[in-house]
Image (tube, rainbow, N blue to C red; front, top):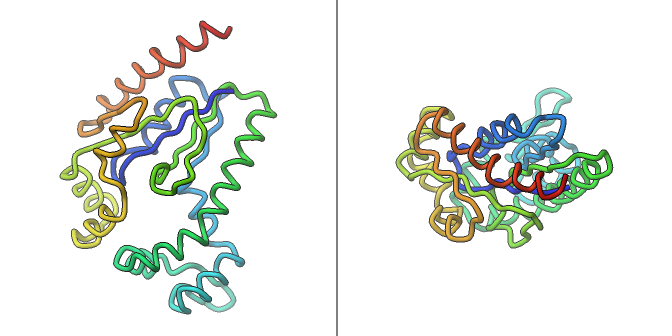
Length: 210
């Protein structure tokens, strides 16, 4: 089983790229993992909520009757304005995320999938890079990143600037990539690049290993 990592900057369209690539290869042949989706799942886990409250303060958790949930607005504002708080949050979440990634990778291999697609936004930043056959960086200009985050997520420009500063510059990621998908255009342009990627890398690989 081959493993491809999709990474890049916030607002660059990594999730869309993974979905399009999966469509080109075929869902029956691929297994996927999203670090962002795993983080969202973890933020509803009681053990994680207890850690958040203990290490980042009670404001990190909202209590509504008998239900507790992460205060995502507080966490976003806190970690992107305070690097120490961001490191604390990462120390809580990242071990769980990598454990889930490794577990899903092993399960996909056991089930006979041909390709494992993992979307790992902080692949370079974590210092714990996942072993992969191909690293694909989905990139966009900062102007487009800011526009997408404002339009699609309703974030303010100051918050977006803090988020961008917390990640590696997209240029640094591009330099380390095996493949770069430039996503400043529309969905059709992105789809065309992913089709080319599938033809050049995956289909060629399939021919070499029938």
